[in-house]
Each structure stands twice: as structure tokens, then as C-alpha cells.
Image 1: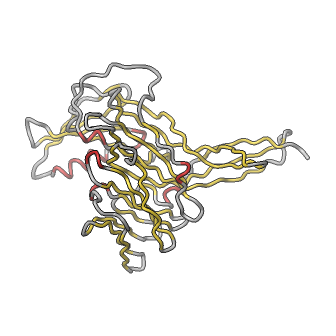
Image 2 (image 1 turned 90 degrees about the vertical axis):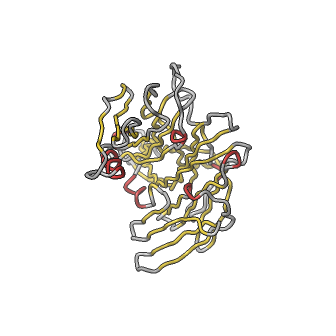
Image 3 (image 1 turned 120 degrees about the horizontal axis):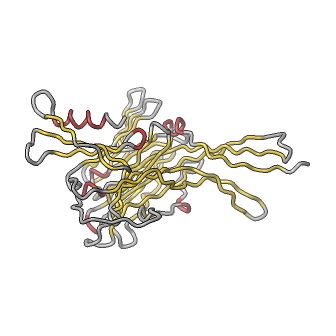
Length: 341
């Protein structure tokens, strides 16, 4: 019998990731046409489902009192049909994140996934990905190659964490693998601080920071098809975009080896925060090719919306849109967002 050598090749199948839900939010639509909307009602979180056949259903999430309405996230794993709801409970230093799953007509959880260690956890975002890795095994003479696939659904979660009211805080990320039955395997959830990824030090100026910078974002880069996380590193005065890439690892279980997928953070790009820009009020949009655009209201003329593009080489010149009868503020923002596509 010829010995086989194994080549592990991770291939992110984000065509499949879209099938299992992709980006989540207050509502999500499956490929089958089922719409899920999450809201807070009478101090309880409720998921309303409008099925493709027109039928309606309401699911009340247990132990969901004191949820912050703006934090609600809902997503679906279309492989198992499992439903997941993420929310922030309470505000300030009492803020924590709760996650519940709905499997085969039964709620599992909720489980406190962050903020139960004395820190505050807020501004959560959820992204569901179906990752597929190809494993190529070849004999030493290069013959009899066999290709197999490993697929895992991951819940990617980001949030902002502070250890005290005086602490500026840090963005955090964690992934949770989903089992074949839709259950969440919390054993492999290992939160990571999204800070100090620079291999060198840089000057950090006194920059006015607004709460808008404390919202890490999960998004899909349509150019590469890979999920990414955008986060502010306020200690180093940079914006960073990190790719979330699945890789296959081998583990020993007794006399047998077991393969499973893990998520690796890979550096995408980093952008220095220029001290003369209005980061306290500006809003950031991220899109194709990791393009970042910042827009803000002109302080001297409320009828003007300013915007510019940022990348690792610097910033573009500031451009403006006039807001008024011809173009509303909301329409102007949507046009600027469109520049990231």
C-alpha cells in the first residue's frame, strides 16, 4: 500500500455562505424566500417569520428582557434550518451579549457570550458563513489523488469591549462553529482582541473619538468573495481590515486523527487615522476591494455632505454633495455608499 501525503487547501465557498444566511441584521431573507424580522416588544425579543408561502409565525425569545433594540441581530443557517438571535442586554458597564438558537421547534439558550467577566460588551454584529475546504491526498508517486471536502457553518461575531468607563475600549472577534444539527459548539469560541496587529509602532495623535468608531463591522468583500472584519484600533490610531479565512487542522483523538476547520485572521489592510479629519462625527462605509469612504455633515453649511476615500497610502481630496430639494440627505448618503461597490 502506497503512503499518501496530504495537501490541505482552504477554499472559501462564499457562494455557499450566501445560501446559509451571510450577513445578518434586524432582518434576513433566505434563498427560499423566508423573511425573518427581529424586534423588541413589551420588553421581550420577538422574531416574526413571513414564509415564502405567505404564512406568518411569531417566536418569542426566552429570557430576553432588557434587550437594546438597536443591537438585535437575526440569522439563519440554511443547511440545518437553525435560527440564531444575538442581542445586547442592558447598557453602560452592565452591557453583555446574549445568543440564542432555535432548533427543531425548541429554543437553546440564551447564553451570555461576552460581558460576563466584569467587562462591558456592546454594539454586536453577526455574520453567518458556510466555509468549504478541499483536502487533496496524493500518493508519493503523484498518482491516485483523492479530493474530499470539509464544510462548516460559522457564526462570526464582533463587538466593542470596555473594562471600565474610563477605558477607551477595544473591538473583539469570535467565531462559533455550528454542528450538523444546528447546535453551537462553544468549546471552540476563543475571543480575540482586534488590536496590536502592527509589526511596528506608529505615532498616535490626540484624535477626538466618537462612539461611531466603536462599531466593528463584518462584511463580505464582493471582489474576493471573502468575509472580513473592520475595526478601529484606538490605541494605535488605525483602522484595520482583517480577512476571516478558514483553514483545516488535524487533531489527535486517541489513535485516530480528526480534521476540523478553524478561522484564521489574516491582515487585509491598515489605514492610519489622520488627526485633522472629523472622526468624531464621520461615518465609514466599506465595500469592494476593501475600499473605505468616510462622509460627514459640513459644520459650516448644513446643506453640504462631505466625503473622501481612505486607504493605506493616505486620503483623497474632500468632495461634497449639496443636499436640498433635488437630493435629500438620505439619498446623498446612499449615493456615497454606492461608491464602495
